[in-house]
Length: 628
Image (cartoon, rainbow, N blue to C red; front, side, top):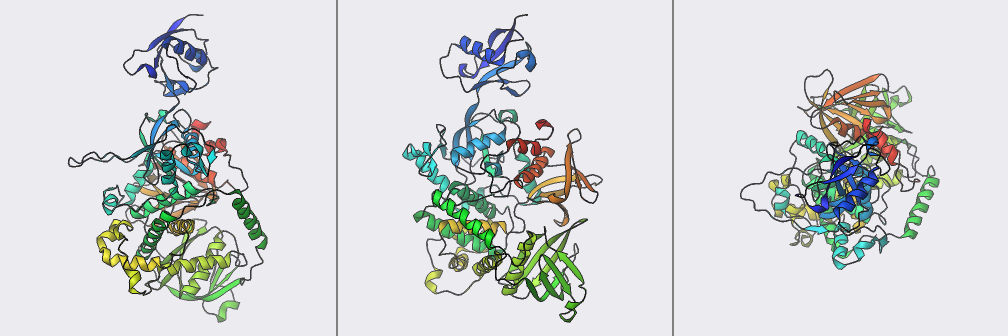
């Protein structure tokens, strides 16, 4: 067997050091190459975390038993012996920057599992990493060094007092954990104004082009040691949240939702903004005195018992099994005003029927709409006495849009609760109907502006411009905002810290545009760019010029989807011989493929499953041709 020289550079010798020449044969295995390199370097240290990186092929050589011949390595190969775990600057959803040691050799999916295990965040599959926006530095701006919390020594994921053990080792690391587990003080208005803000749907689409590929490693994607990456919740399906066990997860989720509101990444009405501001103010006050509940096994057992009880009680509710009332109804056409007409409506099981009058309700209805699997969104203004329900009902050609206008708050609460349950396949007899009605009524109560005594209206400690987005900072002066925020605050002042955070997340998730990730695409046969909105259960085709929804397709009607990697085109087949194909303009088609596969993976999870993730299934659904 011929002996030949292989060039291997060793990171520990420094960037200027020449590569080491190792005499090898083609049947020498990777482990043997590492052994020879270590001996020749004459550095005595722990090499257990090191592996070989093949520079030209941009790949790791992680199988020590494979021979050079099997790997396809010849004399022209440039290899580098480097640690698999390297420091990385991680920007958390709360904007805190952590410097921590992460795996550069595993697929990003597994790297995130390691990060979340270290930080005590359950359900790591919901998060991912993305590149930060490149900010153009102005000449006047001096480099302000942001604080970076270094936890590179942390490698022990065991829990001590509800936190990973290494956080409890020193007072400094304990402070870092408290920063992660407690919501941050309201940011200064100047901070909000300086941060990057998307102003249109195109800019929102460009953000989604920066996600890292979950099936490839950090080093394969050009990430270097000490680079800065952003950790975010990518998939908006938050499974199995247990306040006692999810302190960090809940806090970081709240921080992400808060920044989405403050930076106007998601649209909300003025009344909703005042409720968000009041909840932020309350959470800020309460978090100074009250800590979130630490993990308690007895409480988790109690939660499980209550859930079982709820299942047993289903169907034993005292709620009526039918709703009837007069309401106005419209089916809007694009670019035209909504023309409402009044009808007599009945709601039974999961179906709405409507008639010309109450007297004709014994005859055939004008139309019946089965709400199972539909989308339900509020269109409400308490101040303007507008109580509308927006329904997107699945049809053979996509989704049909329908608006129901209720006459008053009580009618809206009951019909909205019924629609939400019906969309999940539940009837009015379900035990959760009354609690759903109460939840909607409490949300409406938060938006009411009732006159209070003057002492409640003047709280000097409230910095109103830190609690609202720049649009409302420009529209109102602080003295105009203070009474409105404090009025909304009266309705939430009694909530505990955990309840307030969950209420904030609940209202955020009820916003019409919640959970939509945008990609600019060009559909096959079309000459103009359009927007594809990707949600947890549907794809939405949006007209880029007007912003109108053109068509909606649900995942549960999807037969198959695939990507032609040569021409970079995504093709999807739905029930009823509906086929669509599009190429991506602002992002790699792998990102769309991963979003769709990721959401389908999320829908396979259930509460009974253990915390072990089916990583193989995730890569099958999201990895494309690389996973095969």
